[in-house]
Picture 1 (cartoon, rainbow, N blue to C red):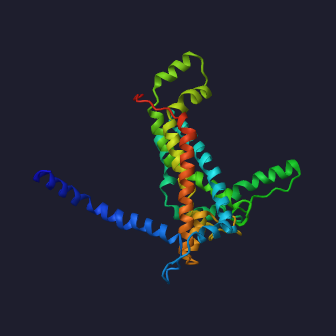
Picture 2: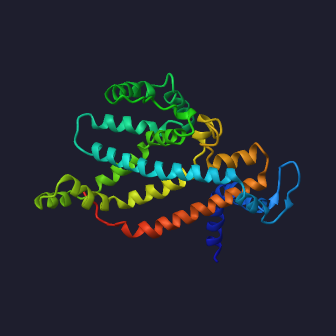
Picture 3: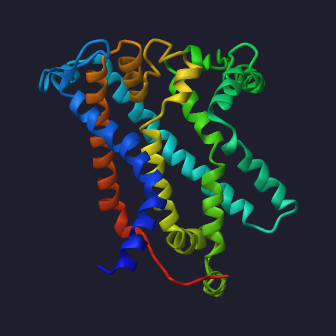
Length: 307
């Protein structure tokens, strides 16, 4: 290596050194420490004590561990497809030439940039069973059905009911699909208009054009949002921590990351929490690999620019 090349190498390393130091000190080192702690009994006040696989054995017998896993799976299975469907439907509508289209795009995008803590506080009020706006809107509907059918329907208690708490959080997650909607809008702009023209000549209706043209052409973005949505949903935490006070009512909203947080920072079982973190890492890795394997073959990549 010549002297000039060495100088260029040193200059390059100097400029990337802040990132390298941050990555080593704030990412790689904590990652390795967490892996080590997962095999120890560690409560932060005493030195770690090696216990091998005992943390993982205890997790297999922990009822709350399986409950948190089930709650997280429920939230993921419903929030991800519903959120993607609503975002795609909004993108289709807002991609049409309508009056005040930029205004409507802004209105639907704004909720996605509201901080999750502020949004959670807002939705606590919306879900209030006595004074919330949602039940205020549902009450006339229930009254009409009761009058017509002779039933005894009433608006749900939402966050106070173990039956409705998780659906309430799923409903809230749909409110913030504006970012996904913008991605779909960008993908729709890249669909060649000539494909729709040919479909019109062949007599295709709107549903057929969406199914056979739009969906295949935007499939890379659909695939990306599916993977990122699954990863994000499996790590749901803030909503339950703020809105249901740590898993209430009962343990109906005790999500996996919330239970992990409680073990680490409330019960000071850092070794146990580290084992949970690595299990979550493995679950996300397996699910992501399966999604790539199963859905990757249906993703259509095209180098065309479109109109």
